[in-house]
Length: 139
Picture 1: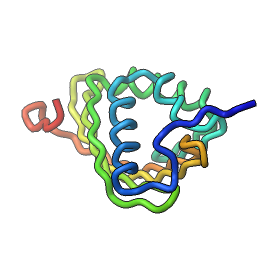
Picture 2: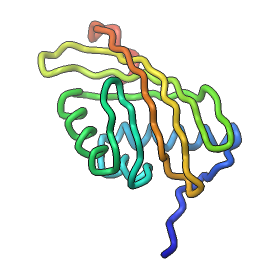
Picture 3: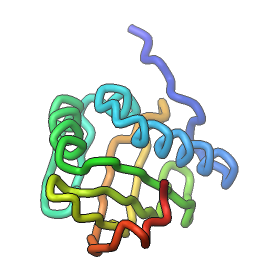
Picture 4: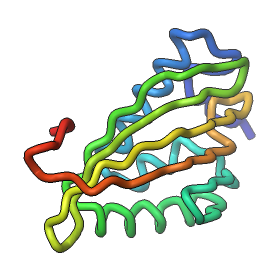
């Protein structure tokens, strides 16, 4: 059985790390949980805030729930650093809750990829800040 590769592959250069980051940003902004999940290994390990998520099925369930609660979600990721098979990212995203209160979330992610270019580990630390709609930066 041949495993499909997800380019660009490690070892990363700064250019290919930035490509992976843009691909991730585009996928998350699509709010398509299945599309996003396909970037991860079938047994991917996540830490997202205080949650531990394992595998694509849990990723899809988590993201569907997230985007049901985080209305008008918009994300921007930025390159921080990389090594051969790891990428560090800083990000911010904005959303409103069901009551109409806007938030901006700030965070850092550490990613580890397998040899086929799938993310095997994702560790995210995130903080939320209430904002006024007029203070939004990401539209």
